[in-house]
Length: 248
Image 1: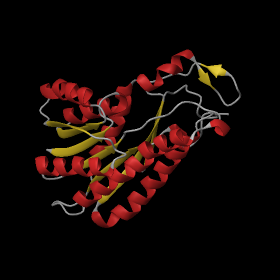
Image 2: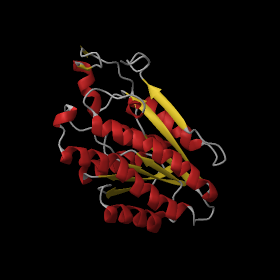
Image 3: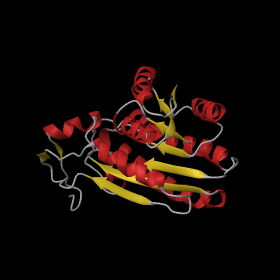
Image 4: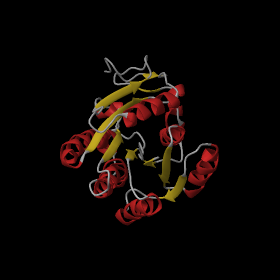
């Protein structure tokens, strides 16, 4: 049985991916800031053959991240997959009015958190036997094209793309593969606002289509299913009719 860590596992995409991995016989470590949703999800997953471990973790805290990976190694002895999913979007604020604290909070969570988790995953994956593993980063369509008034989120997701590339390069010698899934409007709590209309590049407010979050989970499971000598470097999974192609 393979071992996976999913960050931001308490809700949305992280929750769906954790459940999908468990159905594919992964043992899953559930990481997130809030203890209650993680424990509730672990109970839900008891009907699978997967072992689950809920570890409340703030990915912006280096000590908490080290503890997450140490507990995973103690419990399971190895790590085969890390899904760097934890992220926040922040409020839409005009660029000139954006506060430093909001900028820092989003970048610390989305980019620095992914770096900290990747670094700890490297330490385990390079030394285990059999050696290696896979890291999948949750990018975003915003890693390619911004929404209005989204500087911290857009910059952080462009940064995740750079992290994905350097992880792929630096991981080669350790048999560590890294890919990125860029998601557009999966139906989660974070995208509820899409149903009421969100600002577009031309200044209009428009309702945007969403897709089932389970479709994202299936994509991540596919990426995870490949042998380590094959890799999906980048995959875009999006609602077919969302205004991304030709955005602006």
